[in-house]
Amino acid sequence: MERPEPELIRQSWQAVSRSPLEHGTVLFARLFDLEPDLLPLFQYNCRQFSSPEDCLSSPEFLDHIRKVMLVIDAAVTNVEDLSSLEEYLASLGRKHRAVGVKLSSFSTVGESLLYMLEKCLGPAFTPATRAAWSQLYQTVVQAMSRGWDGQ
Image (cartoon, rainbow, N blue to C red):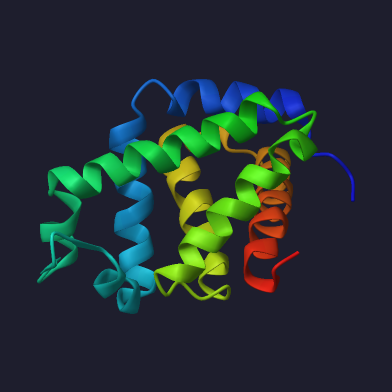
């Protein structure tokens, strides 16, 4: 598999990383729009959220958004050596599997990531930038999916 275009990813992430919580909220709002069945997977202190808005405004979920954005930041930082994150990402995959996330949902997460980038970057989100991010995300998911098959 080819490496994603590092410079396109770094440049585009620079704009997003200035407001990670804001952009992460866009990502998850889109995710819940596309796959509402994911909402019940997010429970904190045995509390189920009645709506995506309820979830997106909870302090616990905002912490989850921060963590997701940090993982993306780590992938961007290590874009030229993603293999250095393989064990960490496989472990993250196991954690997601343990709470009931289906591997198929990562396709929707990828769509939501691209949606967030497009909303954030506007015209700067070129087809080449989209392709680079798609490739990066595919590589991350490939590593995380090892948490499903025990490799």
